[in-house]
Image (tube, rainbow over all chains, first blue to last red; front, side):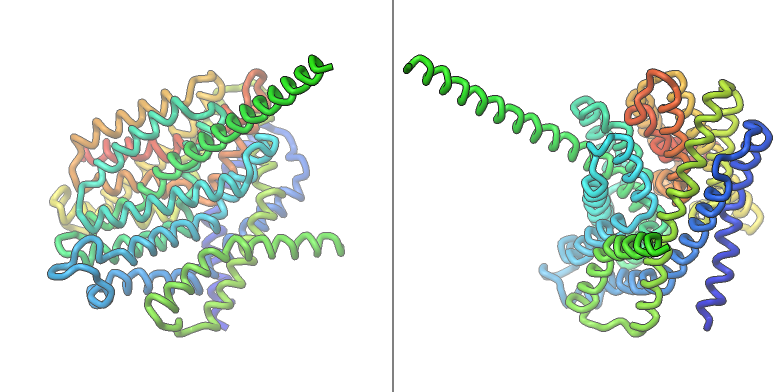
Length: 276
Length: 244
């Protein structure tokens, strides 16, 4: 029953991770705000649930997803495996790593959907926008962003282009999009970059980056192993704004179409009237 | 009782649905690309049950504890009208949640190894530990400053996109001057700082503030704190790399 042992020790270490936050919150509540917390019992239970939730979540990931994910990342980047699936001849070319890109894309999308912090933000955004921003719409848009980001990031490690070229290009795209996106979505889009990469995504992605940087000739794991997270936090900003732009465009077109139909019937009515 | 059991059960199903994509991805790659079965199916199944349970508990606790406390504190600060204490709280929240973050500690240690190998610092235990700690506190301070700036923005109604753009420009300029070894870490440090507990708390704080100050729209003004918390560490870490 080693799992129960792990569970307890993980519970304690999560507790100490949360402790500073709890001290800050209750310290300010007692010393500065000086008011009793509304529904204190409920809030404390809620925090206990969060603690239990994170403990189970982390232990489960550690038992199930991470070992498999890590071994897959190292297997997919293994030169022996790459020899069996390659499409070019001679030395390994960047396109021979196609399974790596597909894996990065799929893992990025999959882990993002399971990311608790993103679920939290999506719930809040849905509530605050009065339902205009769908929970699933936002989560899928972010997932696509992370997926593209990770695929692009692994491609960068394989070809060895300095990452700041990509990041600066990304910044330029974000700035341009900012001027054309609906105003309501912009802060949320900026936020979505930061929330995507936490508990689930970071450990899996780190394994992938390290595996690639270790096996691709000419890359140093210490320098090139980093950078995937940066891609995964930049691309969702772009994809969320693109999603908002697309839905705005669609709404506008639908409204236009509706207006045209209205006109059509109005004209018809006018014609009918003149017929009489 | 029966109803809350039903609620819990449907939440469990929801969590299972959230996990389905990543399970399918891993199963597909195992079976069709690598063509092997994982060695320890039982352990994986138990682990997945834990993940589903954990996600369910987390989301329950989120709505019961983290969201309400974040918002009620924001309301209380707005009512009290003391901007000073609000800003102190914002800084403490950012600093306190980041400084003990396990992902950050791990990344700071790796960074010190890179710095030692790259010849930026002496290759001994002491200077490496010093470097790692310095980096960790730099990031924690930067997240504190970021939340403080974000709250200040909500109070003073500054336009977010200009602030973010200034941040981008700073990052681009500093990339040109910072040592190559630090750039990857700096860019990554923006993403790792925002943890699963910080994000809901900070989001609730921003939205609570924006909805209790008149003339602010929670959608436009409430979000954006996380954005600062993931941009500012990049700037600060690049700076750290240049100074040391």
